[in-house]
Structure formats: C-alpha cells, structure tokens
Length: 149
Image 1 (cartoon, rainbow, N blue to C red):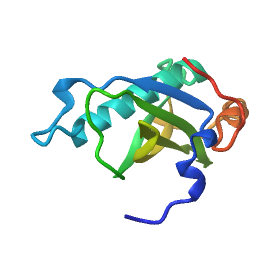
Image 2 (image 1 turned 45 degrees about the vertical axis):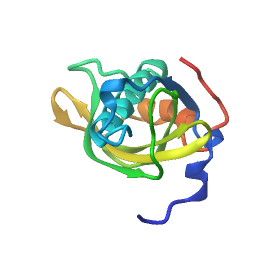
Image 3 (image 1 turned 90 degrees about the vertical axis):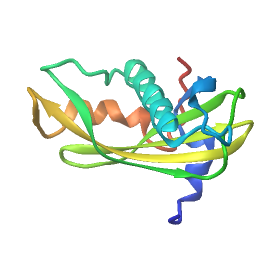
C-alpha cells in the first residue's frame, strides 16, 4: 500500500459524511464485506454526496464520470456494524477533479478510496466552468463545513 497523507485518515477532513448499513449479502465466505460490495457502498456515498453538493448529473447539461478509482483496504469490515463514509474533493484540474473517501467502522479506518472524476457536458469531456470550480470549494478536503444527508 502506498503512503497516504495523514489528513486522509481524519474524518474531520471530509466535509460530507454518510452512514451506510452493510447487508448480509455484502459478505464473503470469511464474513467480511467483499471488495465489490465496498465499491458499491462507496458509490452510494458518492451518489448521496452528489445530491447534497449540487453535483448530481443533469444530462446533457453536465455531469461527471469516473475515469479511475482505487480502494485501499486498511482493515476487515464486517456486518452488521454501520459504516461511516467521509467524502471530499481533492485536486481540481482543467477537466477533472479527485474525490477522496474514508470508510470507518466502529471508529476504525477500513478503507480509503480515490476516484478521478471527469467533467462531461453534452456527452463529451469538457473543462470545468468557473461556477463549478467555485461550487467545489466548500467540499475540498479539509473544508470545515460538515453536511449530513
């Protein structure tokens, strides 16, 4: 596993928090949340973040798609304890931005995710508008505002 910025392990660094309940169907034979289920849980948290932040896709006007995503599994996550997912925006580029997510279970980090999100307008990659860049500011990693869905 690569080295991570210590701020990535602090829930307070993430301006959006979502609590999710794992399902029994999410477990592997060792009774741990399996990797595909963790990706789906992160997607659910990302979807909730997009609705709250105003970044929910509005095709064809705008939206974002995942160009790449990594998940570092830090510890075993199980069932039925809830998961707390922190979501924040990291680096912002010309046509994309990075979204970071921290997953905690019973106060312990169990996963870190990094997704590169590409801005799409009319079905094509497009530069982020100045309005979208400004709208990202409150959601940056380390921003103080916490929004609960």
